[in-house]
Length: 484
Image (cartoon, rainbow, N blue to C red; front, side, top):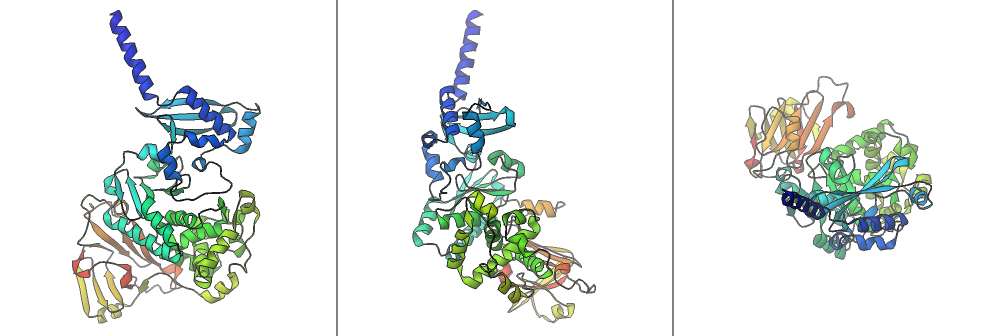
């Protein structure tokens, strides 16, 4: 019996020591160097993680340890701890056989930070939670999916095509393009916001994880966050803060928002600017910008940024972006000069510029088009040389010939909960007030027409179930489409 107790104790100690991958001495050393903001802290980062963190060459002059961005104690808190004004405590939490977590708590301020370790060396939080996730590699991306059904080959190819377009627009040097193809954008695709919170510590639907240049998101085509990464990659060395008019305006204008294509957001931005729903001063300072609802400030700044790039070219735009970037104090106090962004000129030129590709038509116009593409119980599609013409009773599902068998559209489940997803590519909905076109393979609203935003709200007899779209909006061969 005594031997059995000893054996059980030995097994427990062995299991505990095996599970705790960082020793108390190593944890104490890490905490001490963290509080001192020491250069030596980099030696405690896992070498492969350190390579990943610096693989794209993006750096910030005011940041000593890039891997601590958004996960470090404020300098004043560190100074108070080192001066003995407040105390701290830390705890080692075993995670599994090779990982541990060090939790540092400052009780007086009710704040804490968590750090993950592999064999006593620091790794990024997304790496710990995602290291067993399935991976798909493309020309520019490594897509880490918590579940294989979250993405598909079409969506990944669409991301590569987007980067191709952006590196051309942004005038990337050839060496940076080749480096991006080699080193990749690591794209962590989460099943929902709870999973994203777990792997990042942030409440969000998507974000650019600057500490390691990852994209963490719940969207399988989150171009907005990719734009943030590409801009910093284009700049290489850049201050940590940029005026939100430029930072968010660029990402919205060219990348849309999560689940929304740029065109749908820009159309809203044109309406906001034309209707005077936002004052120019609301966009020209960080404080005013931050106090405006993002559903207004983001589309408006996106519209102006796209028009600004079109007007002055990307090279001059990049100089402006640099000019209005700086440390936190500069970004907080700096005001954007209206003449720098050609504000008055753009407003005069814009009238009510529409970006969308959906145009309501009369039923007689639809009838007059002779070339029938598809007919189904839920509507029909016709075409001519300039576009597709639709009649929708309520909603139409378009299935393309190509689909990934295991893929499941989360957007389809949200919008059509009564049906099972069977590989449909497009969902088109129309009623008396709105037309919406969704790409279900990318989970994106790609076109939207809202009567109240178009100046047609008074025309109550207009039937939005008849409309025309540009052929460029839908890809693939119409002969392969199936509609229901």
